[in-house]
View 1 (tube, rainbow, N blue to C red):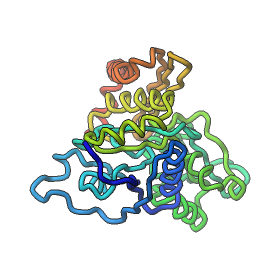
View 2: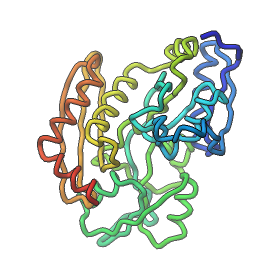
View 3: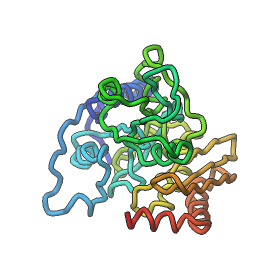
View 4: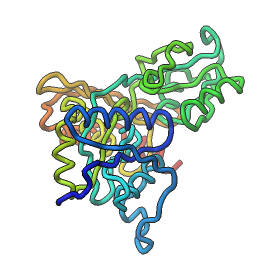
Length: 304
């Protein structure tokens, strides 16, 4: 398809972190001599009124406004934290590129020097909550929502002992010096955590070719494997799932976990395979985990 725009429009949400991500993409394109500009999308625009959003596959709470802007032609590419992007993409939209992966770990931001005895920990993530309770069953977990600044302020304003954040967000906003934190290297991250994903319309062949030039191949293989694993387990249901693929040359390993929401049950497994089969294997390994007791956990989550 011939594109009339000499400058690609990069769609982003307005948060500081989202803008950091879109600026990294803009710089990566500029290094290839490709011009682009940032467009901040604030509202969820209207897409064809006769088709419900769910029929077009538009589901993600964090990605919906950009999906609509992309399909409406207001922007040419959408930049996301890939862990927020549903594994089922809207019709006509593809994951065209990823930037090299940042920190994938979770981190605990503490209010005091350390946690002793009973503690109250804040997180809005089912995955973090379940893994924390599995390790510390007597702790109290409270919900936490909002962008990183909002969540840090809530931690400050409440009598909680700590809150869990993505290390990538802390690094990208240069908050390391200001915070007292511990890296949670025992906690498996969300699939594609620390990865910036770039989506565009399937029909934009020129843009897809240009984005392929900036895409980081090992990170893309890891993202494909982790997202296929999650999709194979979830079947459209949000669940406490962790996954981490590590790519070494043509081979990769995947560590994956599935937990019951209260953390009492935990299934953990490791596999190895060839990167060319990342998507197929991720899905296959999810099926194996379901057969090893995962099906019962998923039933419990659906019933809850």
